[in-house]
Image (cartoon, rainbow, N blue to C red; front, side, top):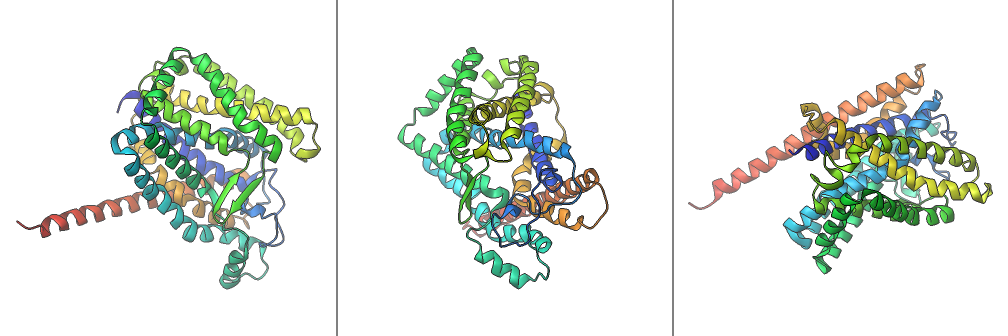
Amino acid sequence: MTKSSLALSNLRAVVIVIVLAFHSALAYLASAPAQQSGFEQPPYSWQAFPIVDGHRWIGFDVFCAWQDVSLMALMFFLSGLLTAGSLNRKGSRAYCSGRLTRIGIPFALVVLFLSPLSFYPAYLARTAEPSVLNYWHEWLALPFWPAGPEWFLWQLLVLNLLAGAVYAIWPACIDWFARFAAEAARKPLKYGAWFAAASVLAYAPLALGFTPWRWAAAGPFSLQLCRPLLYLVYFFGGVALGSYGIDRGLLSVDGPLVRNWRAVTAAAVTMFLVWAAFTSLTRPDWNAAPLAFRIIASLTFPLACASGGLFLIASCLRFTCSVRLATLDSLSGNAYGMYLIHYAFVVWLQYLLLPTGLNAATKFAIVLAGALSLSWSTSVVFARALAATQVFAVRRTVASAPR
């Protein structure tokens, strides 16, 4: 690997651990809503908080707020980085077909089979006399099909297919993106200003109109109404930088992002604190909060999002570009599989720890360690089994071929 490729591979490993830590902490937030009396009752807060533990710690609120601001947008950005190269190698049709296979089929399988399993503890914790049959009846009676964290996959698939459609109509778009990224490398402040402006325009009007927390769902397809356009900006921002090459420009290990990592870190902390301060003033009742507070919270969110994501990227480029560890390689290679299956382990472990008298930090550590080891090992075993199946199929084809 080149240094930038190695750093971004390590970043994938870091991101998947953060994702698991984020979900592991949700049961122990000081701000988590009170547990509902019934699984079937609106507003169905168990979708975000399947388990609400009596042991809480406000430090987890700060950690989860930081990740909620920047982590998902960063995942869309990282997904876009390799898109241009894939489109150039495969063409639009093969690329879209591959995305449907790699993202669409796992999304359908996980939503159909793992989602009911993942949310069963939420039903157990809210039902006096639970049974599998009653759970299934209540599940089918819901006005939607809960997908859990897999909402990310269908939105990513839509953006992938959109990129494929743009490339089919305008193949020269990759060259246009590359020129744009080259200009960004020469004038990073100008690029940062344009990117920040695009993020604000994509997010702020929708946040003011729908609130920052409102979700909508149709079947298994759910989305946070204020963020789809923001994710589009980040995905195609990744496509642009990937078109130019991840080993040069802004993502190079000696580029402007790494050289200014201290300033990026300071910006990330500052913007997060400003956003958090004004969001805390609007959180109890968004519509009743002063308009000025809502506007400031809506304007600072995309700025905190951008600076928080750049902080993680710059840190990995700066400190891990020469770090090659088998553990990080394995985490990076299994990140997708771990994302698909980790949530069931997280929720079940949180449920099993409910009756214990352990404090919030200890419970979190147990859930994270258990979910990390179980999802990681399961992903490794499944990947090896799939590889063995493919090898067997190839050998069988060769053996049966006419000689």
